[in-house]
Image (tube, rainbow, N blue to C red):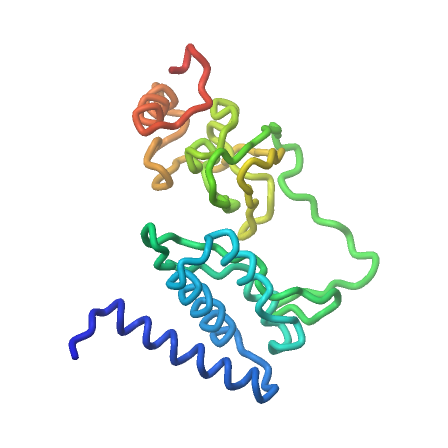
Length: 234
C-alpha cells in the first residue's frame, strides 16, 4: 500500500489522538501535544462526517475540561489550527482557547511581581488612533501585534488610510481576534525605528515614509480587492 505524505501525517495524528484517548479513559492528564492531537483528530473526523463547520468548531471547543490536562497546558494551548477535509473542500479551522483556563492556575513562564510594583506603560506618548473594524467574512481573523494594520486581511473593513504605518497598541506577541459581523474598536500606534515594512500582504515592501509609498500601496491594494480608502486615495 502506497501512502502520500498527507496520508502518513493523518495516520501519525490518529495514533497520537488514540494515545490521548487512552489516557483520558485511564484518568491520566494530557500533555500539550496530546491535547492538540486529540482536538485535531476529532475535528477532521467530524469534517469527514460532513458536519457543519460552525457545529464542528463549537464542539471542538468543548471537548476537554481544565482538570483533564496537565498544569499550564490550558494557558499554552490558546489556539489549534486544523486543515479539515469538509465536503466542499479543505478548510482551515481555528479553535481558540479549546481548554478552559482556571483563574489562578499556574502559567508556564509567568513572571510574578510583588504587590505594589509599578505598572509599565506601553508606548508612552505615542500618537494613537482608534479605528472601528468589522469582519465581513465568515471566518475569524486573528491579527498579531507587529502586523502592519494597513495590510491585514481584506475581509476586515475599516479606514485603512488611518492605519498606514501603524500596528496594534498591544504587547508584543499578543493580538486581537475579529469575529464575523462583530464591530471591534482597536487602538493603533506608529511603527518606530527605520519604519521599513516587508512581507505581510506585499503592499509596501520597503520604507513607509518613502515618496509615493502610500500611493503605490493603495494601487496594489485596490488591485487585490482591498477596501477602506477615500475617493482621493483610490
